[in-house]
Image (cartoon, rainbow, N blue to C red; front, side, top):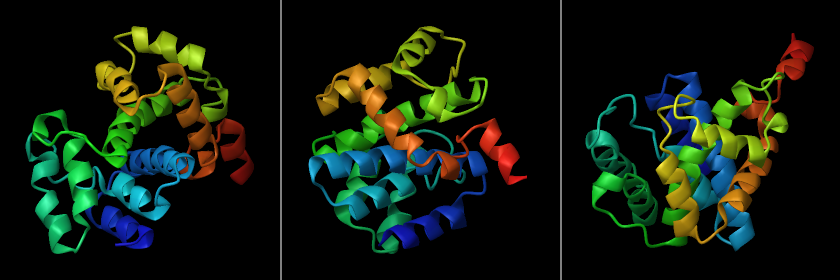
Length: 193
């Protein structure tokens, strides 16, 4: 499956615009790491895009991503990609071993948190988000309460990167795709209208 086929699968199964943008944000971070590590960017993009494709049809653990995996298998999605998707859920019983698996886990919750941080900035832009403010928001349990802070911290640790460097890396990756993610800011939105 290539990136375009993965995106078509996302659009087939996911109606929520915010969930689609989440998968695009995770893709931005994961593919930036693929580039950094000299890995297969297309394979990593497909993995990131598909990691939550079944969320709307299986919104409860442990159904997601377990019940989605056979759908992907039936569509010929590579074993390595399916395993990475299974491993991004702590309750799956699939340990994260490969660089791809660790990267997907490290970027998933963080991408969601960075999106939330963008929304509370005056211009609603990822370009306004800084590591220091992200770390401060992580301590505020009421902010983006559905985002698991422990997964963010553990993700960076499993990947073997400093948490602040990981946050900065993902901010920069998402900034390169700000328009597509709806995080370019209020000024950009007004300019389009």
